[in-house]
Length: 438
Ligand code: BES
Ligand code: MN
Ligand code: ZN
Picture 1: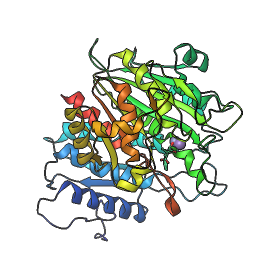
Picture 2: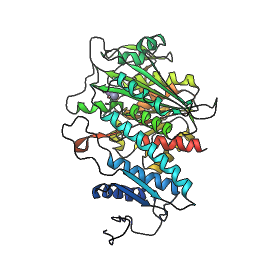
Picture 3: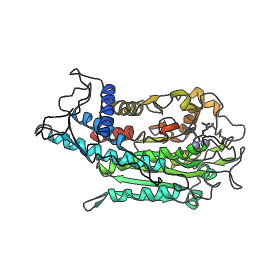
Picture 4: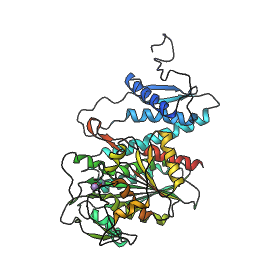
């Protein structure tokens, strides 16, 4: 809308257009439409008036986070490798209008939203990076950058370290190593410790699948669409992105993030169908399909992270094609051995629109993993492929409250809009934010 001459504003963008209370889902749609219209105007700055909006179960802070996230996602671009770049989005800054009473809440929400934007952009950039650049060592280099964000005054709250293949072999991570050995690129187990919370308080643990390229190994994948297997590190990207957002927002919580980074390649050193390996937990695995590699790197990461005595473990992985068949791209598949943890994650997904759907982890499925020669097989047959993958991981989480997000459908898009979505950074950040708030 064009405004009269002399007005302090150039344009007015009105969205929503009703004064009733709307649902969180509708508000998010309105926010997304507003963000895309805003981008279209070519405006350099924008001022949002949100105080009058009414959204079911969303306070002012939540509404601000929702609107600003929509804008962040809309203005993202990835064109590092294009010779001619599309003109950058004109939008430089977005401000939120507030009165004195709402000032403190508004400032905090805006700070959180900009921390979240950095986390989302980080995750999407990592996901989109080509696999000849984004290998395990690159992920480690990128993780090291998080140390910068962790310098708060004189306090140094972030520690980044990594296990190399020699160390992992010593620790008995035979499952991780069976995947990593097939590649010329050395595998890495990356560990980020953030101490933002009380001294001695049990950390939340995030674990990410970081297969920087998944050829399937000796159980080679078919050619068409194989390029999309560069996105097989999107679980890792999302836990790194969430970690970045948590550090930038200085959330008062202790966190340990572990990324299992390896490349799944066929080679003379690659594992064969029929190989039996022993995991760090002591359990043995018969590898019946080398393309079910995600669970092999994750099981050792899940065992390893337990040395930090976490209050909960959440792993994120592009684990199975089967979850895409079950849920499409709208929801991540959620599995958990603890109902309270599941509720927390489902709630975080609901509030942010980065939704998850609770899948069964019943004992009935466990028998599909039976092996004639080892403690378990690494595949469970055609039926319920995403469930049996989760059942496999559950055997390594043991008694610790643990949840698994299968994000094969939600973390990236194929087709014309091919690219990393950054999901589930929004869910993870909200989960930890709500925990930190108590
Ligand atoms: N990375 C794939 C899963 C995947 C498929 C992610 C499509 C994103 C899009 C995983 O490593 C895999 O290959 N899983 C197999 C498991 C099977 C061999 C039991 C699958 O889903 O086919
Ligand atoms: Mn695979
Ligand atoms: Zn994979």
